[in-house]
Length: 165
Image (cartoon, rainbow, N blue to C red):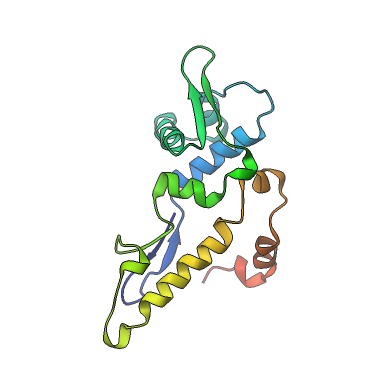
């Protein structure tokens, strides 16, 4: 996921990539798996209707980030390398998509502007801080259990949150 912003403020949006969405869905399956056995990539892909090859690449990135572990072979598959309450949504997004927010491919703190746009960097920093205030507070365990942090409940309680603008 990235907060995509342009210098003049048009088309500002938060983009949750298919990669991040698929990663979360696969990880939530692993977080709720009670068999104690590795879960096949095919099982993860078919249960969430995710293209297998795409998911295998995502799982490799998650393995490289230390979020999942894997084993090859007939009894192989994937499992969480960490406890579900140790993995935040921000961790997952960073593993598959990189930084939470960027401006023209740069981290917000590395941007600078002059004149009328002088304080725009502060806005982009605040956008990133806002994303962190949610994504670094919610873990796989929270989502899997449905017991979301109060910050999520408060944000979702605002009827305007559910309306597209």
